[in-house]
Image (cartoon, rainbow, N blue to C red; front, top):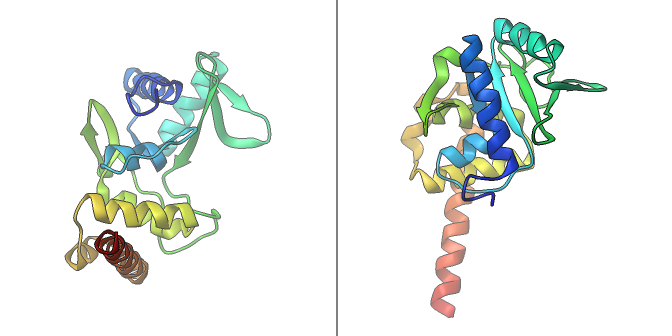
Length: 189
């Protein structure tokens, strides 16, 4: 069900996005669902949304109205009561990964979103930049696969902040090592 786009995670993504649209909230889907939108298909159990401070305020009003539910002990995690799927909110000005201040901050979603299948998704350079700045293993794996699926090379580095270009180069090198390994395996049957 996940890859046909009809699963609970997809329904939650669509419900939250629709609520943001009705409220006039600029948003961008990030995380695993954005990775899927940018051609690398993998599963995920939740949805991540990037919003501005104004969007954060609007979401809190939706929670107060009962449209979505807050998750105790997780200030930026919410649940869609229709599907029981959680979604996380990332707010402009915050920092990827540990949340500690770093060279890359979450941007304004209005400046970095693009329409993909009628949903606002963070653009590819921003997605890769945020994943590299988060510096988690899954994020690096996602970048390796995004490089492969979008046929990126060294020229893409110019779209990224200088502070994470070295990480991009490492992911590009890893993708090439993996591809060479697969070619050798196929030749040796």
